[in-house]
Length: 117
Length: 115
Image 1 (cartoon, chains in turn brown, cyan):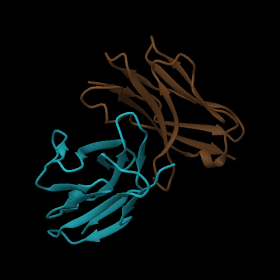
Image 2 (cartoon, helix red, strand yellow):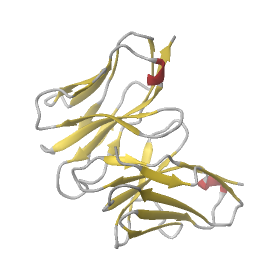
Image 3 (cartoon, helix red, strand yellow):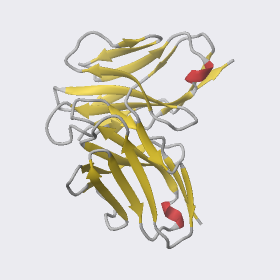
């Protein structure tokens, strides 16, 4: 079974600064996907960024980027130029690439990020 | 992106009654839908996975007779909480996916309060 660990329950960052959220995972799979989801106070889950395990290049979406270290099974999220609207819970998630359970997401426990004005 | 609509967003029901939550994919065919439960300040806990036209697969510890899931069409899945009790009060979220390697889209969630 896969596990996803987010070791930082809460973090805060000053507006316009950069923050990095940590995520590690455990799997014996070679083909998988990793995700970061954002859940703002509205509680709507929003996909922030996605990484395919077979891609060595780190995914980037505007101010959001990841540091994917496959050998270390680490998948951190960097938010640059933090904005007040980034205040939310952030969940790291894992999905198998094929086979049984490949439709399902396994979530970490989340990191609550507060952006301070 | 694709839209998944979940209704109602909030519901209050009396203990012992049943409540139905709907999850609709508005602009794509959802071959698979997921139902999650989220306790305050906690992560999403997968309750069950349903494929259109077949019985849902429930996660260990989830009572299938209590949480009835129907996925009768490619755009609609329903979760019925039967004989609800206060301990069933929670935030329920649905998610839909068009295929195994397509993005999962989430509904807005339903806050259920059983009084």
